[in-house]
Image (cartoon, rainbow, N blue to C red):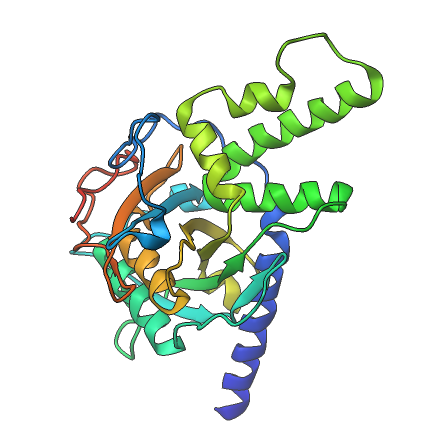
Length: 310
């Protein structure tokens, strides 16, 4: 029995490493049927008189996006009558980019509790002796910051990875196309225009500009990748869906921010979305994030956001 558990642990670690390495290389999904609304939209002309670090209860910016694979679309959705049981595997914290260190990460117990509470909203429940897992949920999490200047192609690849975390596959694909055209125009002389390809992408709408702002700032992130557990036991890797969440650092302690963004994103786990949703919550004076109580989405695969808690 001990050898069996050791083998399972090694295979989980290998799958976790593979899913992390494969993250930037995935192809964009096919177009969705509808676009989600932005939760609590803000006017581009709104002003904050005080810097957020001096505000009593500053707003905390969050993003969430779920991309689903063809295999995930073929599975019946989890319901209250027929829940899906899962096993969670938590990877160590990752610090990416130019970070100063000194982060206070949440405990593994706090992370697992946040994941379990969030997944339960959409009828994903922890496996037990009576209910074997059909889903393996691997969570990567950490802090991401920009690279210093002068990294060339490596810097662009890293920027695309950050864009995927914030905006999802299709957003990153559009960003990649703009970066590629920008480089081609620079090297070979493209069409003369008042706006470069990258500027046109940045300014195509307010939400794109807002997501790029988030991708260019320091943020905490968490990704939950759902794999078919039966396929995993057969030595195969079959990704069903991946939910990616970020929260702007903004002076908020990591130990509170990462579990909070997981819990705030509860209604989106396992639900296909065609566009990232932007959330905004208030940070309380003791640097906790007030996320409210998540609600289950009644409509399947519609990608509209769940009702905002507070």
